[in-house]
Image (cartoon, rainbow over all chains, first blue to last red; front, top):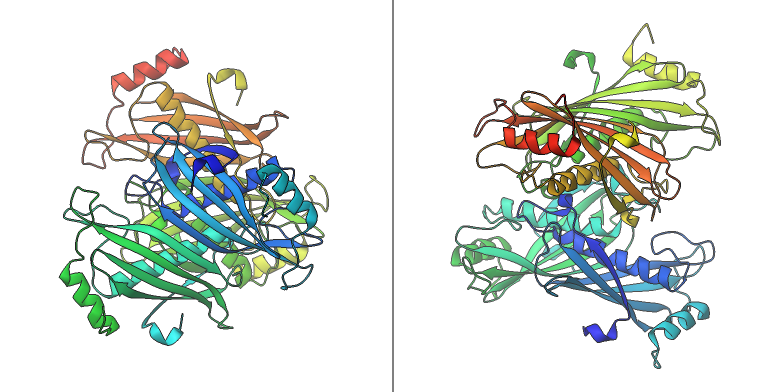
Length: 145
Length: 145
Length: 145
Length: 145
């Protein structure tokens, strides 16, 4: 992933209890950090879907996560979380994100998270709503979405 | 993944605090469950590497996780965690695992976890030790490893 | 707390990711274990209140926790969770619980958790329902409740 | 607890995955937030004990926690964590802390955490080191410590 493709950044600071017996952040926490990025991204764009809550008229589910661990983060480090929606398909969309240690700009981990839009009260995929598509397009200024 | 390829199974029961505001297990927990499977697998084979601890003479690091979420697990469900080492390369090996709800045999998630063996006090990969390779081979009865 | 006062026991096994950089269970997890005990206790008695969910006609809130840490638990140890309702007042009740390491019968921690019953859609305490009181009394065979 | 007795404050923002199925922060997380306060407090005073790590020449253990839950915190709320050492005894000391929601100044929870100083490689309490006592005294300007 190329940092210049990312227009949105948020930050967290590693908390003491997120660090395991090796003195480094436990691997499951990096996914949580990336999720924070996705939630802040949507909030920033004024998109009111909650990635982990049932919607009255539709809902979005996470169907796949890929994460590469590049270098461990440590207690008290500040991590920049870069997030973008890299692709919107017919019924799905893809978030990309990466974690960078603030001071050294060291790459900590990168993540690709695949989401699908489901129809109300159903397990069937539905077309990604236009309002969502337009808001993301406008923010990301991608022509091909 | 095909259940008949897996010779090792362990179990967990979903705890109340692992369930999020949607009433289902938060996505990061499935990775933790798969990690439990890997740790129990190595214990079962009598292999004394700790997947998340520095070793005196070498160490194993997790470099990549892939997880597909198939159906959410709920509070109090018992999950079977199937685990195997599917491939041992020169300096790396691959764990596969999947989570199945005990009663309905519903597939909950599947995971591929890539590990690399690092040389002592170094970030350089080293050849997977023979003892490890032999123990796994013997257990998995795989000819091509 | 005296073990012979406790009629209910459940068990958990310490998971690898619950252990902190000191190699022992992080202090916040003991509270979670005690909560597991309370939830299993209520389930065992056939009481359908969910300690952490809004009820249609009333709800129970945790207002205070006290916990004494006696000896740390370690990865893979099996802990017995003893739980009882020690007292039911007019609008409140008190859970007691303690954690004991299975093999050595070592006391790990003990906990007192204070709960209050709130009236529907309100922050006002209400009288503990008779059905709850009777079920607990019957199980605990306490005369003075 | 009286806010004007507290000279140290730090902050956290509630993360989405800290919220349970009731839409509010799970009770165990408030203890974690208070712990963040204690760690930041010690760092601020330049005291290099790690509350959860073995020390070469001595160590500090948490022996008791008391927490009162006053009002639930919700996703995205900013919490002020006020922390002080309220008392230093011969071999022990007491942290007090409380959580206040930033915007409304609503009291969320308060906590008292009892710590004991143990002698090197021992389970025996030892006298609180003078350096620690002096640094805290100086910061808290308490005469009676």
